[in-house]
Length: 214
Image 1 (cartoon, rainbow, N blue to C red):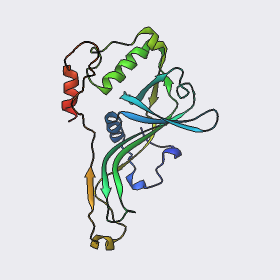
Image 2: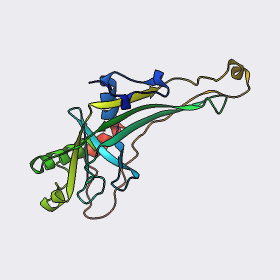
Image 3: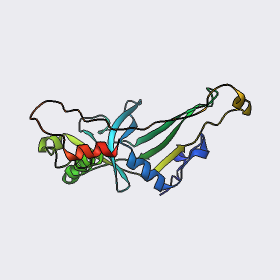
Image 4: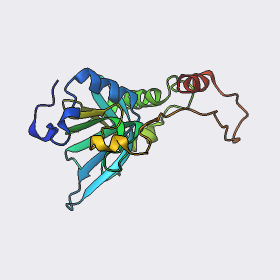
């Protein structure tokens, strides 16, 4: 699978372009939220953040059957970005971010009704492994009110930036300013019970999720 079409060609900072689909797979497997963009029938753009799961080289996304986005029938652009650090240069111009990003173009496939529940369970377990079986499954009504997309990752572009700042001028290295990288990561905190309903102990799969993301 390659990013071969012209709209996936990285023109700005092309040295950061990624052509290895294995890297794309790892980024999409680690991400949780995709920003999905369409151009509405009225002609203006809309971008919606959506939880997703990366399964069998495709993105699974879901939303209300009443959603303008889900009912658009148009091609979409889904972007996933992982922020790994703030790059602090000695000049404001050269300051940057370390990141891994993927942009996917395509026509989403609507998951058929007989496969919808399985897709939604897959989405739930992708967010927190072990979630299925530890919460009520969707009802028939909830399934009717939900649409699931499968967006194959066949047309994509990806960029990655790593490392320290690249100063605009070697003269900047002599300035009395600090340069370096502030690493960033998403971590899980201690689970907070909502104190509603029955008094139930924090389940093992939640505790495991926290341990895996500390």
